[in-house]
Image (cartoon, rainbow, N blue to C red; front, top):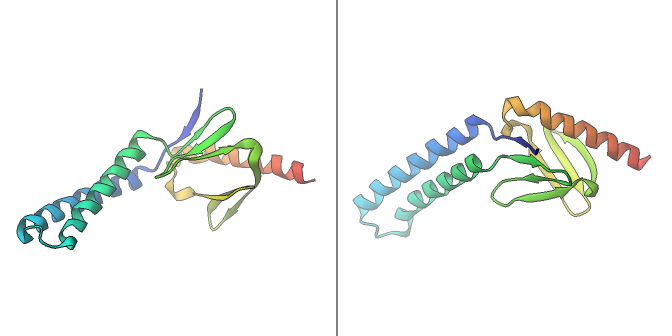
Length: 135
């Protein structure tokens, strides 16, 4: 069984409201202006973008833990193999996962409050592993 971390309800609700608002404003703007300017399509496109992000974040979870790797779902999915993790630490309240290839920032405020403890358990275990590995 895989463990998942969900996005916060507040984040998804914000994207739904903002996407809907931009889409409605944009449609009225296109109807009113006749769609003659490039800028008249900006609001509907922005609205659709927020709604697509809302859909993706509702469909996919924020983070999923698998036996060999973790996946962080955003616009682009990041896969991190546990064996590639070199260092984990906190900075400004966010979790930082350092691999040989990249530094991944995992904002704590984007996690569902009920799931934060699950990620913190993972984070502490990874910190212990990297500390033992470096010593």
